[in-house]
Length: 53
Image (cartoon, rainbow, N blue to C red; front, top):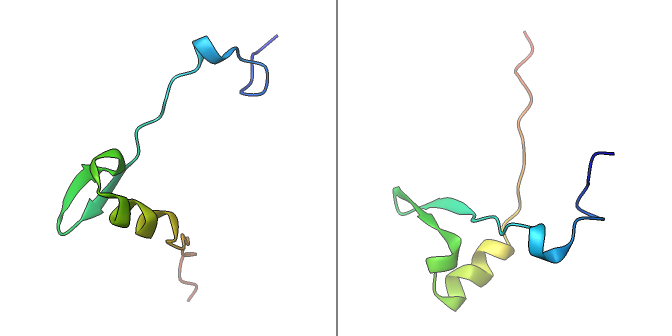
């Protein structure tokens, strides 16, 4: 059986560190101040499809 996130015990889980590009350089979101963290949570993510000719 392959464990999934739903049945992994808490002590076996690992926190994921999210990095993003801000002001021209990459930085972990955990180091943002509260206002910038809130702004990051409100961002809308999108993905572009390849152009069709």
